[in-house]
Amino acid sequence: MKRLLVFVLRILPFAYMAAIWIMSSLPDTAVIELPDRGVDRFLKESLHLVEFGILYVLFFLGALTVRGFMPLWSFVFMGVSILYGLLDEVHQSFVPYRSATVIDFVKDVIGVLAASHFLHHAYFSGKFARLGRVLQRIEERVRE
Figure 1 (cartoon, rainbow, N blue to C red):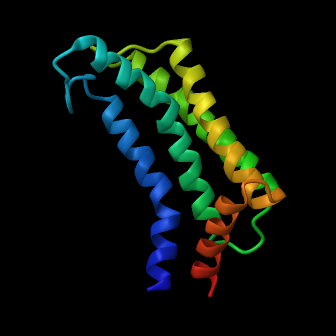
Figure 2 (figure 1 turned 90 degrees about the vertical axis):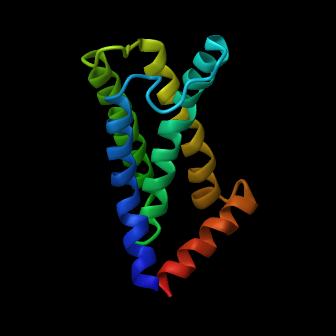
């Protein structure tokens, strides 16, 4: 069971990246479209803040499965998540019915920075004690 959990935690960021790529290849109304276009647009624009933060979280959780997890890795995952956000915006610029804007990329970066702030400090510097305990429990579970 432990091996399966480790495998899932390690593969999840890459599966999520594939899901982002696929969703970015579709028109923004392909999955869901709310009746009020303004609300629909607001919610979908807000997801930029969350989407790439989740990618960082998945990389971080995958790293908990590896001995010797260092703060440097956290920064590497930040960079990878941010660069993937940039790649996603470039990709969307070539997709009909999609747009790529600098403000979307800025929202992607803010999402990664927010997620990394909480996880990095919870795990490495002891801030956010509850979150730190959750991360330690996950780490203990996958390293038993």
